[in-house]
Image (cartoon, rainbow, N blue to C red; front, side):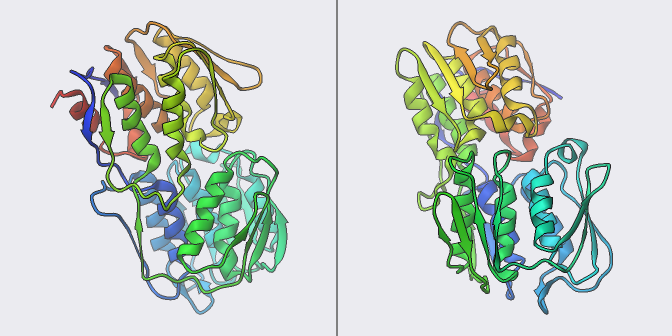
Amino acid sequence: MDFAVPPAAGPVRGTFAVPPSKSIHQRALALSALCAEPVAVTPAAGLQAAGEDVERLAAAIDVLGSWQGGALGEGRHSLTLDLGENGTGFRFAIALATLRPTGARTLVRGRPVLLRRPHAVLLRALSALGAHVKRRSSGAVRVIGGGVRGGRRAFVDIARSSQYASALLLLAPRIGGLTVDLPRAASSRAYVRITEEVLRAFGVAVESTDTRVHVPAAEPQADALDVPADASAAACWRIAAALTGGEAEIPGLDDLWAQPDSAVAHVIAACAQPGGRELDLRDCSDLVFLAGVLAAASEGETRITGVAHTRRKESDRPAVLVQGLRALGADAELAPDDTVRVRGGPLRGARVDCAGDHRAAIAFGVLGLHVPGIVLGGAECVRKSQPTFLDDLERAAGAR
């Protein structure tokens, strides 16, 4: 559907509730499934409901069942898990399904855009640990339970996604422990650190350096886990305030959790300075759209680097960003090395194709508070992470 963004009547100010952290929530759900006793994983007080991605993984885990008798769930009947467009959940579900009773078959599937994304690194790593996983021609993955064993060392290339490593690390306590070696200066290393933090919250004694993570055999357990506010969702309202000269307060953020997109504060500070600037988003690449729209509304030229691996996310994010900015009259280009260059200048209203990417819709929606006349094409994709975003956008604009 198309959604015409109402321009803000004045500076965007106030308190904005956001969903729980998608990254922390999904990791905690996966680990809770491996606990012998039930663990309540719930949003912290004052937060909105979780988005579609979290709901999809929670539903998949309900189907898989609970940890009992040394395996995940009971019985060897065939199961089908549908993760929609949830890349994190898809990879976690594949890993979890290997822990079902020996011989139990699970088909992990999703929408075509998800099935086209790269998953081979994870499948190879699981196979090396003895798991039976095979990708079908459709892109869905067939998993046969049993066989996976840890107690060894594995190198995981996370150039395209940190989720490959995280999926293995979440299994590690139940497969006899595992040491995962990572490339130096890897993109999204910060998201592996979130996995380490969640493991520690479940009592697992993780040891790590920049290039190695060791998870011992352990019995994960916790009384409960309150999931803090999502720093990615909070970032959009901070950018909205920066664009309009306002101020946004986000309840539920917890500094004890090092969410990568808290780096939005540095993005805002950099764009407030005159002249040229470079934004290296290697550790917080989910900010690429928000950084791009803020750069287009700022003085001088901005070079956005460290986002090459986002070309195979829900969309080709650098390309979709440049295409959207150009539709609004911005001077933007994507260099051969995947650097996005944006020169600030006058912007005009126009229809922006969100390419089915929730982060594109959210960023261009926020820009529409500042630039009158922006229409989001395919705005319904925001349900993936922020189900109430369009309503919240109207409230921020003073339209309701």
